[in-house]
Image 1 (cartoon, rainbow, N blue to C red):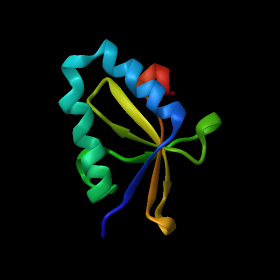
Image 2: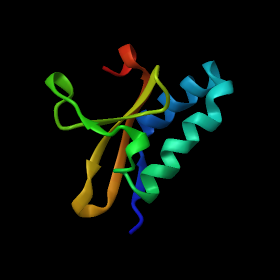
Image 3: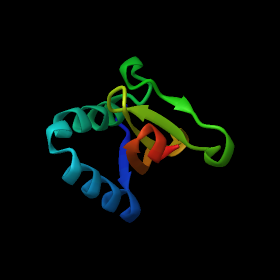
Image 4: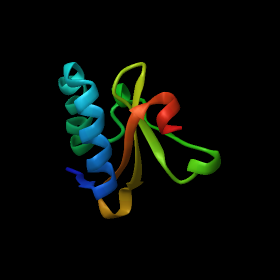
Length: 91
């Protein structure tokens, strides 16, 4: 069962800015996006729910330092991307 990634305008701006500063991480950035489409519960994504002001959102890892926050709507098969950045920037 394939999932559909939904790229919000805010996410696209954030991703372009992040990629501009980290062009060397582009392949690491694309890997979790492909996994999210195939299986958002793949163990290497380290998907986890967020708490506090980001309650209702989830996070997946690009690598040890960078994350993508997302809204996971399993019933609709949509994965809405919210933000990308360092651990401190995203949280």
